[in-house]
Image: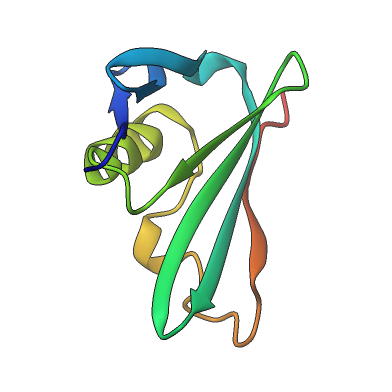
Length: 104
């Protein structure tokens, strides 16, 4: 049974663990997003690492329920964040990539 779930709105996002908030943030506080891809035992996964203004890092994994809505909300809320299908399109062998940096 999956115990983690991602939630996202136009203003904020959260990771729920066993139905309770375990981590959260506001899109306005995101300073950098790194996309990570990994392969283990033939299973491919993607994680997003969101660095927030307070220095904390929120990690979202593509195996958590709510991933697609989370990514859609991120692309809508963060200016210049490219769509997920382009994060590793031209990055042969690259496992960690900065896909968004807030410059203001």
